[in-house]
Length: 237
Image (tube, rainbow, N blue to C red; front, top):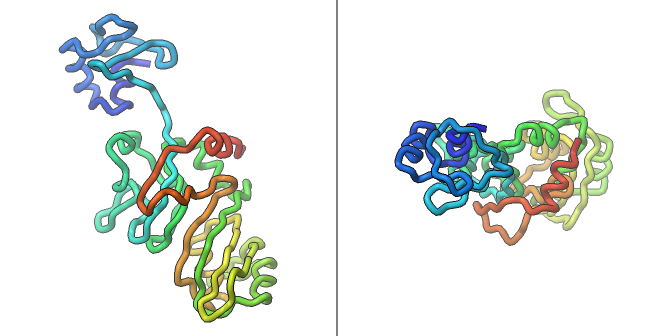
């Protein structure tokens, strides 16, 4: 890999900026001052420093975010704040994107990465990755609703959903439930409840497969996936 491409990818500016860093003798490779910004380097073997900062090459990032309500799951938007806007410049330069979407008013687990292949695997309908949500429902959720969801319900556009697991946590005028689905249709959970005459008033995603929301993360906070979490994501093939 070219030195200028590596450093540009790691957030040290454009290739023109990197060329200037090299010209000013701020870059060393294996303890030798770099003289050519286009020189070939091996990020796995060569030790590269910019000033006194050791460059640790990471082609991909994997972030778990506790998405807050009022923020959209997109990379940019003219009117609303996006989940990317919540990231520091340290992570923004990797150009990550959300894996799947959560509605603007929905909160909870959101994965952000720049690894397109991994995102495709996690979102593929053929993989049946289970997504679990906690919701508060306006209306009394019944055992009949549990059976209806288990059989699949027909949405307003005529699409019949795959079987979903509905668990009633409390049944009242504001019922609390958990629901697990393997699809990700537009507003799916909300539309499923609309088919049985009820309304979702609060929705939070708890997990995607074995990737569970870190409840110690405040709303809007994020962190890199740990080794175990990353292993799960990469195991979806």
